[in-house]
Image (cartoon, rainbow, N blue to C red; front, side):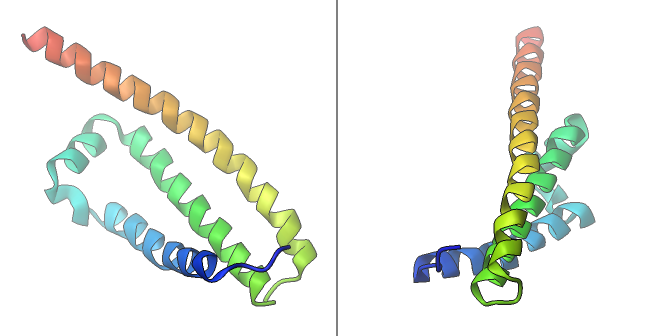
Length: 115
């Protein structure tokens, strides 16, 4: 495992701290006051759930990188864990794109029917 640069360290620390806060804010409903978030949770909950899974996997990926960098886990464990996290991340990303396309198509159909 290559050592992380200062930029990579700061970015990973930010991801490990900020992304779980986004997950908590969404699950507790603190973001429901924003119209787009309220609409997406109401009309496309699976899109939002998969988005939260992606954010969680991203946080886990950064946490494993930091743990490997600081020696909390061995480099071999980090090298094995990162692809094991990356594969579900890839699958969730493809599902997210598919759900987003469906959400946009649903929105465009509803706008056409109102006109």
